[in-house]
Length: 525
Ligand code: DGJ
Image (tube, rainbow, N blue to C red; front, side, top):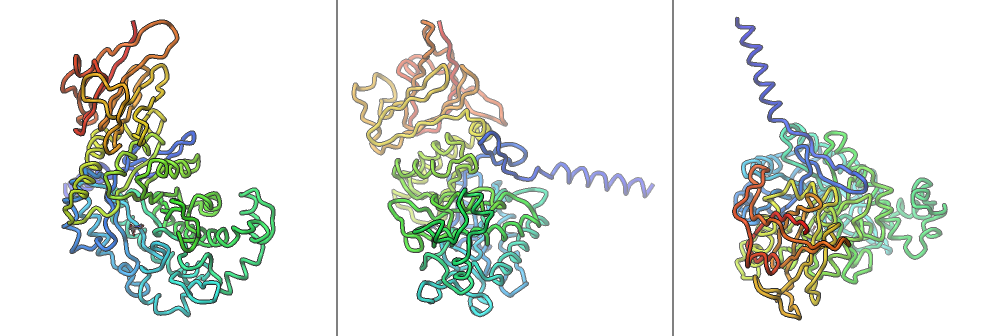
């Protein structure tokens, strides 16, 4: 009798733990498109990133109102090497445990940012026992032989120390979170590369620099063999440093994945806004667009490269997105500014098949009107997309998501939806005829997304935009709106709140600042 009860008890524990276990997050690539699978299905990351010094147990309780105000589904928070390994080989999981426990309590997923050897092109987060021992843990040197505030990527002691700590972190994560998968992604280092010198000029680095490029790298880049200077001429120093940094980080990531293979990425301090001096304008050797092929060839344990994209300028933002939207890299905005002007670009990222968008510096007690406008702009997007997050992620993955983002001076855009076109206007009134010359929105902040569910059925959500559906089949039939439902998804099922007709459809479908979602069915006669 006792034995039977014991077995029954074990069985129920087993069943309970199986019900609780979720599928491990993974990056899936299909026909040049990507999705981050979380709980077994594509997931759009709508993240709130903490300020650098906020991931402490005493501080965390104060950050949640900001995360919730934004309707973020994911928190991004640093893990500080100096806190995690205060003495060599002694690991302190207090901060990570608090992050995981509190994220679970607040119902959000978590992305951990490993502030290890690099943070913004410098080494400020390495533990004191490393900072105080440059003989064992050498610094990189500038061209005059002066040390810079970076660990040398060519010193094995540095690499081993970072690998050991990162592996310990991933080991702990597997123990604590290997079933529930609150943590969905890990960023390895933060904006790596070197500030203060274009490359390390220490003795070990110089010897490698004067040697030939590794044959495998030359082959992957379709370059001849030769020294770095032979092959890359004026770009040799930067390419060499990128190789050193990428190889170092790849080995840190590999050590972590050997413990627990979550998807991992690096974030780039970008080479943009006219900045072009490696080591001064941006960290030399980080995954900037000009060295991205080299990074891809040298860091196979890094699943993708994210962009820390702090521009509100349409041309600049979309240019960078295009540089990183590649068949070997998904668009991932690893950081963007807490500004209203950045919010519309979320839709552009989704239309490029992007996996997510993260707003930096969400915990801030400033209560300025600028801050309030930024919160409102980001929150309504996250709320809108959050209500159909799985549908959005799936549509982005299979190329059925389309978006129009307002560009100053261009108040009209056309989206090609196959047999139908969507004409999107910015600056038209909420109903009534649009003026002959559309003015655009005063802050040029209109944006709209469309998910094509079938050839004649579309989900539409937008902010400060009008959309008209036009048939462009050449069969002399006319297009018509058959049914326009306003509604929302409840537990994954579409629920209709009301039908739009009359003034609400005769002048296009108009979206203001309130998060609104429509399901539109079109037909012909
Ligand atoms: C980019 C860094 O990755 C962040 O940690 C933070 O320092 C921001 N810059 C500040 O703008």
